[in-house]
Image (cartoon, rainbow, N blue to C red; front, side):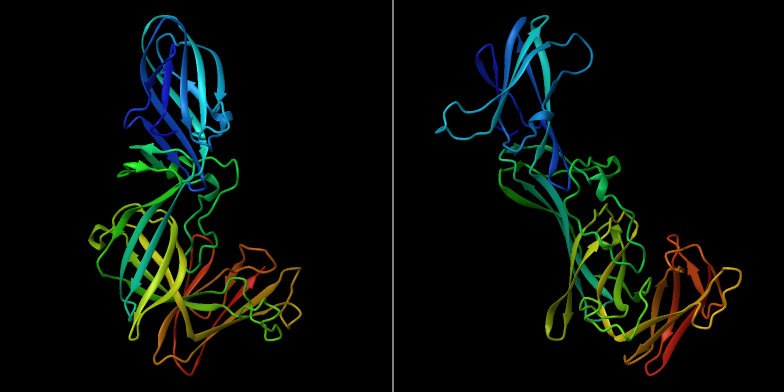
Length: 401
C-alpha cells in the first residue's frame, strides 16, 4: 500500500495515508507485514471505506481492517476487492472496500493490515585486507528491495529474519553452509530478530535502495590459520574425480578476528550477510573470497574466513577395528591421526578442529591425546599446534566407542 491510498466515505474521496502512518515489518525472504492507519470523521449508520492502489503483490486473504481496542467498534457489514473497471485503464493495483455500520457519528481510527510479497532486505559487507593480514577496513550496508508494485512514503520499517533462517552462529573454524536466501514458504518472523531501520524517506516501486550501515578506517585484526577435519578422512585411493572434482583433503584457511566495537568504528548489531574479501598485494588489490558473516552483537568478536593457505597440507587417517585395533566386549577403540606439513618460510600456529565421532556416533571418550586440546561447546576438539617447514606435525588421539 503506497502513498496514493484513498478513502471514500459516503461517496466523498479523501486522502487516507498521512506521512508516518505506514508500518512495515520486512522479512529477508520476500514477505512483509504492512499496516496503515487513518483517522476519519464517520457518519452514524452505513458508510463505505475504500482503500485504493493496494500493491499488486498483496496477499488478499490476509487483508484485515480493525479499530483500536476500547469503545464500541463499527460493525463491518461487507468486504470486497475492486479492480479497474476497464481493461484499458492503468493497472494501479487492487482496491479494498469496506462497508461499515457505525453506532454513532464521530472520529474513528482504522488500521488496514496485510501480508505482501515482493519486499525484502539483505545485509552486505566488504572487507579490505592489508598484505600482511594484520589490518583491514570494513564497510556494510542494507539493501531494501520493493517489487510489490506500490510505493511507500516515510514508512516506519522494522527488519526481521524468518524463523527458518535463525541459526546459531557458525562455530569457530567452520564455514557457514547457509548463505542468506529465501526461507521456506509459510515461515514467520523470529521475534528475537526484529531490528528497527531509520532513514528511509521513500520506497519507490520496482527499485532497490542501499542504506549505509558501517564504514571503518583501517583497524587492527588478528590473523590465524585454521582447519576443520571433522569427518574428512584422507584416502589416497580416492582420486579427485571420485570426490566430485574437489581436493581429497581438508584445507587450511586464513581467518581474521576483529572486535565489533565503537573503537573499531562499529559497535552495533551487524546482521548475518554476505561478505566479500579483498586483499592488497604488491601488484594491487585482488579479490580473495566471498563468505558469510554471521550475526555479530556489539562487543562480540567477528570472524571472517579469508583465503586458503596452499603452503600447508593436512591429512587425516582413521585406524579402526579390523586394522589391528582391539575390540573388547563389543566396544571399539579408534585412533585418529592428523598430519600437517608445511612449505612456508617459517613456523606457523594452526588451529585444528575435529569432532570425536565414528560411524555417526558421538559423545565418545577421548584418551591418549598427543597434544593439549580443549572441548568446544559444540563438542569438537580444538588443537593448537606449531607447524615447522620440512617436518611433519602429527596429532593423534584415541576414541573409545
